[in-house]
Amino acid sequence: MEGTIIQKHRRKYTVDSNGNYYSCILRGRLFRDFKRNKNLAVVGDEVLFEVINNNEGVITEIKERKNKLSRLSAGRPDLEQVIAANIDQLVIVSSSKEPDFKPGLVDRFIAAGEKGELEILICINKMDLIDSGEIEKYVNLYRKIGYRIVLTSAVSGTGLESLKKEMMGKKSIFVGQSGVGKSTIINTLQPGLNIDVNEVSSKTGKGVHTTTSVSLYRLDFGAYVMDTPGIREFSLWDIDKKSLHYYFKEFRKYINGCKYSDCVHINEPDCQIIEALKKGEIPLERYKSYRNIYSSL
Figure (cartoon, rainbow, N blue to C red):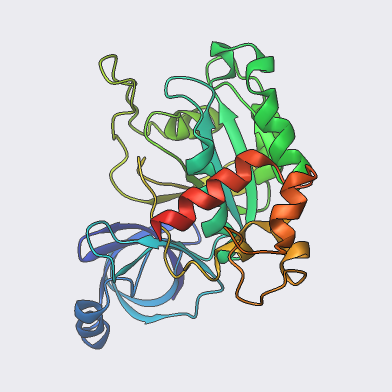
């Protein structure tokens, strides 16, 4: 039988096959491979499996992935963590307030999405907490670069129909820091899912982790969504100082015009990125993000 991994619990996987759910383990050879490679099977992977007892099965084959979203594994600078596979769209969920909008984190997610060749959508939630003019600077910035943006409020329902339209017919993954409302939005889009949610800490102003693992949900309006645990930091995988500029798409048309082929656009003479920055053709906020990420690599 064929199916899709929708949840992973240590060594067990929940597989969806045409709306029927099976608790599966890896067949012996795959399990031995898993011991060496923890990214062998992740949420979103398409698999072949055999039913062995009612709703239990054994995964016999993992199909080739069309893409993946990865990050640097926490505490392991040499190890990749594949968050999910076979994704159509990366939805970067941020909030206007509680917690505050963090463009630097958004730009890290964008770089990871560009690396994975994913469609990118930015969702700014909790618009009920501010006047829309307070976030307009960033909305205009990202739209000018070419990224789609939806402004939502899971409380008032503002923008949720627009978000639905962007998600229809796609398999989207929601990413963002803790407390921005990823799970709340999904619960609002699909009443009855009852994904656990939590409030932002009144002491720290930071989100409290509620979602603890990646889960894939089938939505009634013709979409799939992956909910992911909230994070406070996102370290990039397989992006180094020399390649970072490729994942800032507004940089690309200037890169080959630099005097030096190995220019990293920091202090080099005749750098076309810096010239474009001076002319206002590249946003200062994005260039600052580039410099900050560059320094962290």
